[in-house]
Structures are given as C-alpha cells and as structure tokens.
Amino acid sequence: MTVTTDLVSYEDALASYDPVMGLEVHVELGTKTKMFCGCSTALGAEPNTQTCPTCLGMPGSLPVMNRTGVESAIKIGLALNCEIAEWCRFARKNYFYPDMPKNFQTSQYDEPIAFNGYLDVQLEDGEVFRVEIERAHMEEDTGKSTHVGGATGRIHGASHSLLDYNRAGIPLIEIVTKPIVGAGERAPEVAKAYVAELRELIKALGVSEARMEMGQMRCDVNLSLRPNGTEKFGTRSETKNVNSLRSVERAARFEIQRHAAVLSSGETIVQETRHFHEDTGSTTSGRVKEEAEDYRYFPEPDLVPVAPAREWVEELRAGLPELPRVRRNRLREEWGISAHDMQSILNAGAIGAIAATIDAGADSTAARKWWMGELARHANESGRAIDELPITPEQVARVAALVSAGDLNDKLARQVIVGVLAGEGTPDEVVEKRGLKVVSDEGALTTAVEEAIAGNPAIADKIRGGKVAAAGALVGAVMKATRGQADAARVKELILEKLGVEG
Image (cartoon, rainbow, N blue to C red):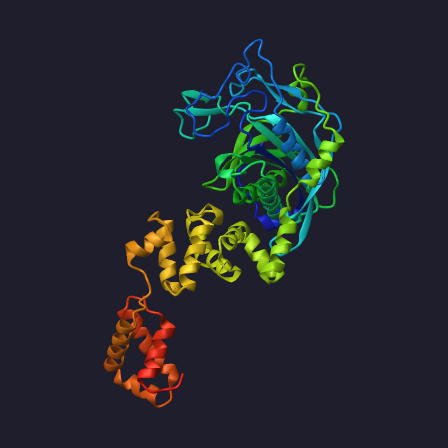
C-alpha cells in the first residue's frame, strides 16, 4: 500500500517521468425533464419533490427516452468531430450505493452514441494541441448525498446522510478522451485548456449552461506516469468531480508530483479514486477504483436501441452554430486586434462578455477596455471567473455610453462599476446615489478654474511664459476641487483661455 505523502518538485517529476492523462467530463443537459421520465429538472426545488416511480426505481415502472437528450448528445458528438453511431443501446451499470435507488445507473457501455473524435485546444502562448476523443455517451445523473456530522462533509466520519433524488435521472453526457500523451510539462495546462474549450463549445451549442460551480459540468482527472523513454502506461489515479478550470490544472499538477514521489521512493501507485481539496490544492484517497467488470454491465431490457436516421444527423450537423474557435477568429478580424490580444482575452475568459457588450451597443475598443482592465482586476482580486462577476454586459455597455456622452470620465466610471459590483443598482442608479456625474456646468467649471489660477500664481506665470505642460498642475487642482467630476480636457481648455495661451 502507498504510504508516501511528500511531493517532489514539479521540475524533478518531469525530469524522470512522462505524464499520461485521461479526462472524463460529465455535462448535465439543459432539458426540461429527466432522461427517462417526465420529472422536472429545475434547480432549487425542495428535496425529493421532483421524483416519480421511474426515477425512484419502483417495481413495474418503465423508462421512456428523452428525444431532446438524444438530440443534444448527437450535437455534442458532431461538434467534437465524432462519428455518430447508426445503432447503439443503453446498458445497466450495476452498483450498490444509495444515490441511485434502483441500484443501477442507466448508461451506455460498449456502444456509445458518438465516438472517435477530437478537439483542438489553444494554449496560453497560442500553441494548438489536439485532444482525441474516445467517446461521448448518454447516461443519467445520480441523486445528491449530504453527509452530516463529520468534519469534512464526506461519508467518512459522518453520523448520517441525507439523500435528495431530485437530481437522479437528469440527462448526462460523459465525454471521455483517449490517453493524452506528448504534453510533457504542459499536461496540466492542456487539461485546463481542454475543459475550458469544451465548456465554451457546450455553451455555444445551447445544450447546457455548463456552470461548473453549480455541478452542471464536472471533470474527472485520470493521471499516470511512465519513466521517460518508455511506452507502457503506469497505474492511474482518478481525481473525481473537479469543478473549476483552475482546479483541473492544480489537480493534474499535484498528482504528477505525488505519483513521482511514490514511484521515486520505490513504492507502487494504487489504482483509486481521489478527492480534490480546493483550499490546499491537494488530493486525498477515496476508494479503490473498480474495473468495468465490477459493474456487471448488461443491455437495458426496458429501452429500445437508439438508431438515429442519417437524415436527422445531417440536419443537426447543418444546424450547428458557429463553434468557439471559428467565432474567435471572426471576432478577432472584426475587432481589428492581433492574435496575441485575442489570446489574452481568451485566457481571461472574457470573449463572451466583450461580444455581448458590443451587441448591447458599446464599441469594441470600449468593451475590451472595461472588461480587460477594471473588471479583470476585480475578477482576479475576488478569485472569480470574469463572467461570474455580478455585472452584465448591458450594464458595462451603459457605463461606456455614459463615458462617451461625457456624463462620466474614466475615474467616475470606475466608481460606477464598483457600485454595480457591490449591488447598489444599475449604472444610472449608482450615478444618482453617489452623485457621480461629470460637472458640465460652464459657470461652475469657470469658477473652479479661476480659483485654481488665483491660488497658484507661480504656475500660472509659467504657463503664460509658454510652459503649457505646467497646466497639468492646475488641472489637478480643479479636479480635486470638483471631486474628480470635471471633464479634464475641458478644464485644460478653460485654463489656457483664461491665461491667453494657445493650446
């Protein structure tokens, strides 16, 4: 049994070993009803109120397939460049655990609906890495277990568990990669980039919101190491249900270091599932990993096979939306920016927000400026993804419009954004509550300028003598007097007019 808990450095791990990854991503589909019954999939209902005899596995109940679920699976397969099966069927994956009251999960085993595809992903420096897809298959989600009484929220040490079967039966698509080899030291980055690109693709298809923080998209990170220069794969571990892009990268990196430490000490890797801990970036042992035969798969006798007509498949292919990578290239040309700038926007996760802000009426320069500047800073400081900030593209477009109209300057606009993020209301409501409009009254500006000149005679003399740059000091004085609410350009014009100097 493995007892090593120390890590080796990442550099030392890569000096001796080559990482091999496999990523399994579960996507909850956004259907209105469950995969095999008519129960609602809406979030937020009281526990165990969205159930029926079928999803509770009552004797005599029979499943009926959700056509939209099948259609969504085909769309995902097509977008991943997969072949679509002409005939496939469901199987029963048998196991005893209370999150599935019928003691089996209806899934697909050796006959997935989509197989043999790929997804090209772009890394932070622009390099493109192809991740090959083994399969995408349909299944149903399990219920939710809440373990009570322990220190960790896990079953170990808990005094009892609460079960909510509202989620049991919600349609899932599981997307499984082929072994990812050749990434070397960039393996964790490839894992993150793949899940990010897959999330964007799923959202573009409209089949799921793919909100990782809400469990709508979850990633299992399988990782093994093999000595450099060898071909045989090592024993793998599977870190389960990782629910953020950053955590996918951290989990892969930690497991590389842990595996290397175990192997370098002469011990062996246990094939097991592991839990990822957000607070430490580490993983801990879960349970010994089952093999396929442990689940005693057999064909589901209560469901007919799925045989999508080729005409239907081609109709769905023709109706696919513009996919993320194609869209990025188009937007880059429309916005007139470099590949490097678009890569920075991609890395920040801001493409969708910027595009939506432009659609709401902002020009592309202003939209990029606010999302990649002030809002990216807030996202970094709060540890959130940029599209999770509590501000909408429409609100950012309104801020840009107020700046364009001269009602706000950049300094005031930043205060408005802070107010919106703090929940103080819309941009206009924040402007009103905080009294942030630019002072545009010529009389008030003239008075402030005259007071600044009178209070700084030496600087005024320098300006009269031709040192126009010295006007900045007087502009600063006026801005201070007006609490930053004056139009700095207009203030400078008035100063030079009052002193009889050409701008």
